[in-house]
Image (cartoon, rainbow, N blue to C red; front, side, top):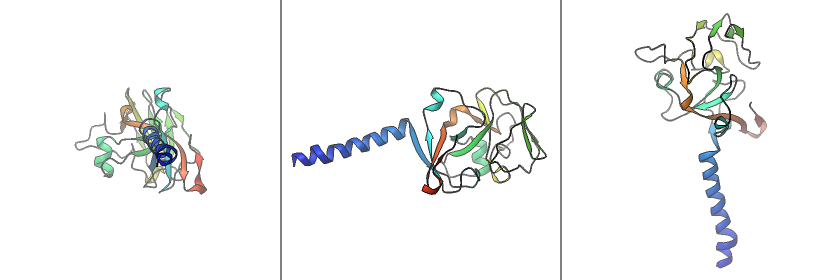
Length: 185
């Protein structure tokens, strides 16, 4: 019985405890339920979010992030309560983002994501405030993202933005299905 506890039970319990600690602090898996990030991330792909990276560096334009949706996104997109979103950062504080004739511009310069689908809308967003982000899905025509979020009543100073405090981490890798394993950023 002693060998069972020392050689089998104790290592299994340590491994389980480590898995919980790693998931709580460093990396957490998420399943992607929608096609908002197609073709980069497919529906039902599973990704690992790096929960530590933004303690060491700033969020950059182009990062794919996992975040808790702001209230305007919840009201517009009606996600299941507590389900995080995965989108690409397009605007960081101080940026002016416009979309016109299928071209996304940040501060007047085209911002091209090679795999992103061309948006079918024209919009000019307010300047991204300090502490906030503007995010789009790579499936620009089919993503419920900053271009659609509206609270009731509408508040343009808040609606299209994600507070940086809502960011859970950076989506780092697709780990399932095996045929799609790859790094994202």
